[in-house]
Amino acid sequence: MPWNRLPPGLLPPRLRDVVPPILTAIIVSACLGALVGLIRQWSSDQSSPGGEIDLGGVRTYTFWAMLGAIAAFLGEKHAPALLAVVIALVGLQQLASLHRVPPTQHTGGTTFASALLTLLVGALVYWGYRQSAVLVAATTMVMLGLKQPLHAWTRAFKIEDIRATLQFVAITGVILPLVPDRNFGPFDAFNPFSTWLMVILISGLGFVGYIAMRMLGARAGILLTSLLGGLASSTASTLAFARRSKVEPALSAHYALAVVTACSVMLPRVVITVGVLNPDLALTLIAPLALMMLPAICYGLWRWFARRPAAGSVEAPSLTNPLSLFTAIKFALLYALIGLLVKAATQLDLLQSGLLPLSFVSGLTDMDAISLSMAGSQTTGQVPLLLATKAVIVAAVGNSILKAGLAISLGSAVLRREVALVLGATAACGLATLWLV
Image 1 (cartoon, rainbow, N blue to C red):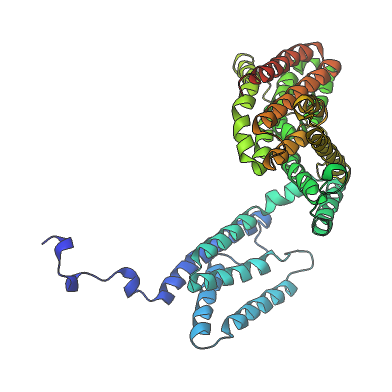
Image 2 (image 1 turned 180 degrees about the vertical axis):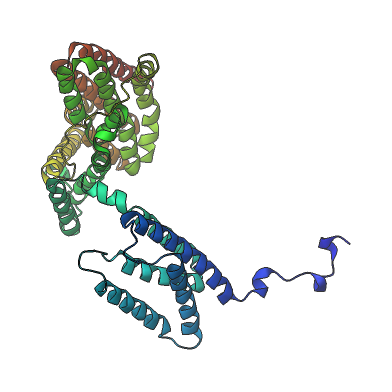
């Protein structure tokens, strides 16, 4: 008789109806604890090859996770305070272990934190929050496994970087909730809250590239360095690579590729930042800006395959921390000024005739400010979608012309020729797209 035609009484019950929930929780907790312990033991062996310090391994973390699940079960059924007692006991045991470590060795608080987290993973599993338990366990494993790389990365930062980051976080975390979220000034063009939010968006995106540059340092190849430099600051990267081509003229062609790459990163970056505020405007920008990237893509492919760039590492360009207050305040002032001019043009019926020249001039100084201003203005209905799209394209054209001018004035003969050709074609493609949108 086929299995699916057996009488209902003879069908085997489902596994979850047979295995008690506590047994399932213990098994799952033990598996997660064992994985955390495995990574902890491996990390301990890497940092202390002689094994002088016992920080706990697979067995210890398995026991801790099982303890968490069992304590949560018994606390629910019999002793409500049992889980808190178990956490306190494990914490005391960890504190006592720290005092037994010889003075010449240092353990830190990683084991203490990971032990308590593993206990709570077991409790989460029993309470039914298994996705959360897996997330906590996975995050704990990642942080334990990245101990050595994280220490190496943090040593790449200077005291100025830490100070700038702390200042920016303090200003944002303390002042932003206090500033008014309403319009001020002529034409009600200035909103302190939204202005600083734009600063956070742009500074945060640039800081991602800045961190990556610091982490990789001179180990990165020239193409990766230019990509990250373009994400952090395409203008600074253009200046740095153009000047370096004068010092190392034999590598001028490779520095030209770096300049073109850094400038091209600006275009998808604009789409991403605009998309955060205005997905409709970002969608209309994808095709025009992709067409503007076409000359750089063709040049990069030709350079890479026909005249492959040097495989060695290149010194990262010297960039200013995007989270420095001076940089943030400059961007905030520029963004506020552009917002004022756009509002004034709207109120004075000069929008159609004045916005595109304003966008071109703004693109010469900062591409992000005009892009975000157009995203916000189009959302509120001040600027039509078509006109906002054209304004961003014109700003991109102006920015490409500026970068070409910087490269021509500062770079070697080879870099001047190749960058002028590619960025000139980029600007021409941008002007051509104005007929297509």
